[in-house]
Image (cartoon, rainbow, N blue to C red):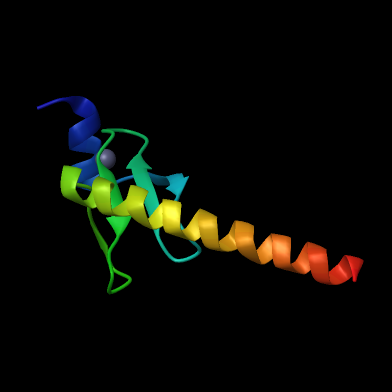
Length: 80
Ligand SMILES: [Zn+2]
């Protein structure tokens, strides 16, 4: 067992946001052991698996498209 892992077991993981997928979904990485978590559909934290990573990137695409459209709409309405 690595000392960093032992630290996490004793004191808990030191998670930092590694990626913002949407306003509600974020990915977290532990600074010590690099374990990754993400927010699931219930708003709870769950382990970031390959499948979840796929879901998140799809979510991110949808979210970015929507916010981009929203910005364009606001821009055009402010011009008019
Ligand atoms: Zn950790």
